[in-house]
Length: 144
Image (cartoon, rainbow, N blue to C red; front, side, top):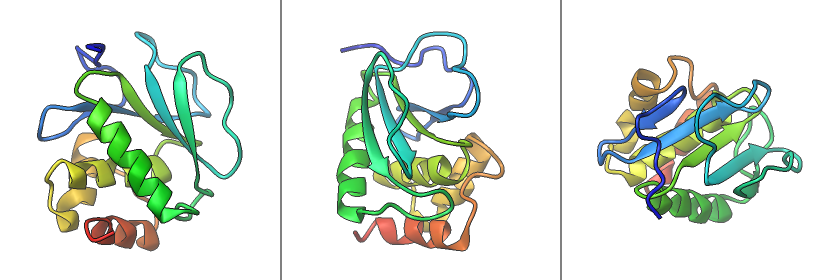
């Protein structure tokens, strides 16, 4: 599959490897342009239905994933799909859980774990990753 976010649109973050991943807040309308081909929903309850492939990771607002092993597996899948698919990660507001997941994707892409939150704040949103425990989760993600 070769459907990527090219050119990058609203909320699309470029990882060092040139992979593109879109972060999104589900409380806002779907951005203009192409739809994702794969979305990781980071929500405390079941996500809204979408017309494309999606997976739900139980992740309550302002908290951490309920199943950290499942989170790692799903984020690795999203990272591996990004070179050829339009991958999106989304939570309610698009900052805390989404920013944390994007920072974990940055770690998978080679950004040092201690620098991943700053990377996402520079390249996605300045208020991404909202809580101290979300920041710690990113730093520890490399060793999970």
